[in-house]
Image (cartoon, rainbow, N blue to C red; front, top):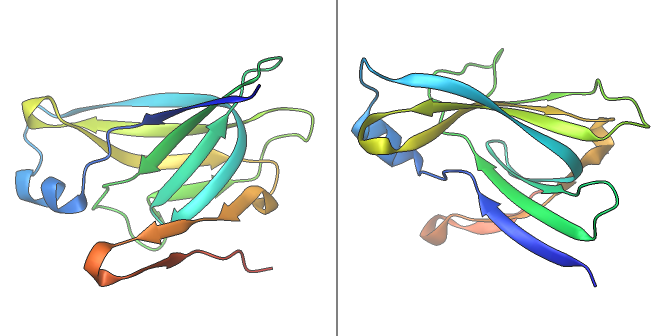
Length: 138
């Protein structure tokens, strides 16, 4: 039997980040997510990763929604790098920025994949502002 568990990595809406702001005591650290077997793109800043340890029947789910407000067109909040050999497992690196009141904010995220074909479309819902599904353009 295949079991799926879910983990949400500090999902904080952008308006909270903008309202709270960063203080001078903010620090950052980088977290590596190993054994990525599937990637879903909800929006350009919201991805879901499925992970599975080799030999395990358990599939984990990690949702990543960045709250970075310092990016520009040359440095998007989520970067996709196709540098993983076909026989290796994919992985992601997430920079987490810590702010006031013990709240964590996701900064930049780098997805290390076999190829861009590993990115699959996924649904999104912005409440009264609409919903839909991201489609892969081939």
